[in-house]
Length: 201
Image (tube, rainbow, N blue to C red):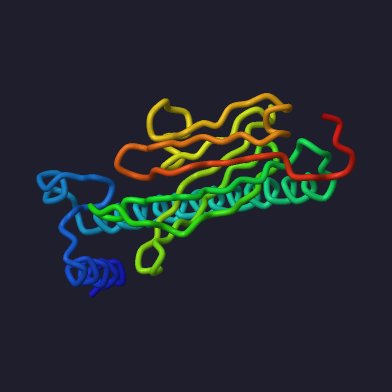
């Protein structure tokens, strides 16, 4: 038996063992049946090359995303280190009810702070720590809005979020808002500016 035939048999065996019924390169059954074993082997080799290229591209994309996240984290860390008054907002979620599954649960109060332009997940838990989920919190670069959303999908929508708006003076005094995000979360959100350095209000 020629080497090409042996290789083809091994490849075919692997495809059978993995219960894969599709031909490489999207070749249909009629065309596949009319191809020689050599051409079929070449099709498998070409598919393997394409799969390798795709996997390498996906790996590069994941690496680029990871590097972008790292740069973003470093930028936020630098902003925290050099923050001036008005750059960081501190917030409290209390009282807080969250819907886990189909039931509303009294949940643990949440305390968090955000730098201008920061957006991150906030972990939510019921009082007995049996259930947990996440919400998305953000502080606008303008320093005039804190948003609390279900997740990133709702961040640019009118529904699925509550938005705490105010001037710099408002946030200096503290802004409070009772909210209800349909079938997800309800409670009271309070935010004010974190005391840093001189405060001219």
